[in-house]
Image (cartoon, rainbow, N blue to C red; front, side, top):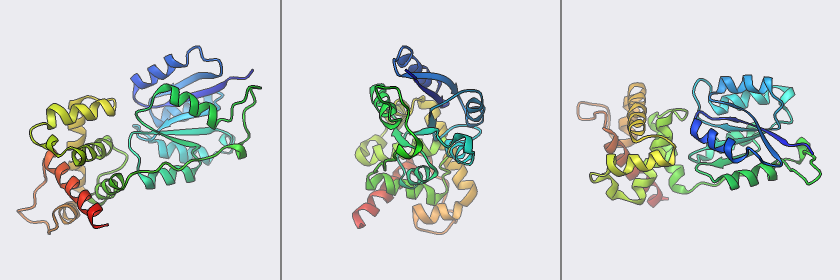
Length: 262
């Protein structure tokens, strides 16, 4: 009986290790290779016979979307099933990757039993061991809440690049603050950053740095738009780059305002 050969491309090495351990003696699923960035992922596919690729959207050197685009341009990978992994659902990204030919999207964090079920279901694995033809595969739209959508739109409008880690951390930070505003009252470093770190498999220090970096990138690229979108005024001496907590508060307030008006 042929096993499903699965490869993993994700720079979270702890997550990869845990997935490998879970499937180490699995009767139908075999983890054949792993890669920690997009470039290594393409090399990995050249070297191994892979039925299904678990592909993280945010990775160094070459992100998951760029990898997906390259793969779908190569005829030799036309039968490869690809499950995209993402920590935060943005509607436009999800539509884009599904249009590019991703088989399914899995939101982090996920439990491994859920992952196992999805792999077996979306590869069409049967008791005879037959793997499906390409036309028997399906895609599924993952819905997101109005709040998630507004947060994503605001971050893009101010110039936060979607491929950097700070974007993912900011999405979750703003969502948490909208749900629990008191997190901004002296609990940012003690509660908010640690909560994001657990959710995103990171550390509080890295979360703080990634958010600060994302804000700096957006400010350096389009400070005028930054001020207009978040503060409703033109760039002048009174409009300065906000600190992490102030930025999160501004985006949370803007997102909630948009939802209230809709």
